[in-house]
Length: 80
Image 1 (spheres, rainbow, N blue to C red):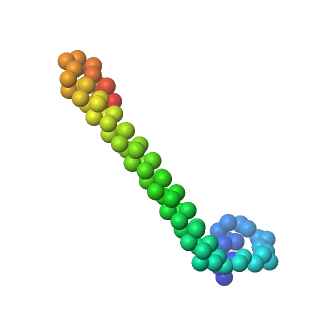
Image 2: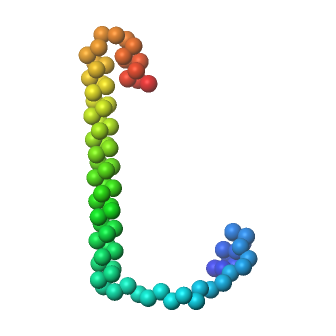
Image 3: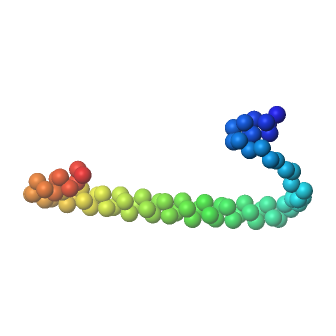
């Protein structure tokens, strides 16, 4: 039934079953994969936080420049 629904949605008509047997991971392999994923997530989180920090610093600097400036043109730059 699931294959029929998939075929109807995607237009696929030729299906075949895989004969490859995937061995289950050992506890050590699972732990290694989990650790690797945690490291990747930590790296991405740090990169995102660094990017956000730089963005906030830039916006604060531009805002300070606009507040300190006496020109009305600077206000236009801050708004845009």
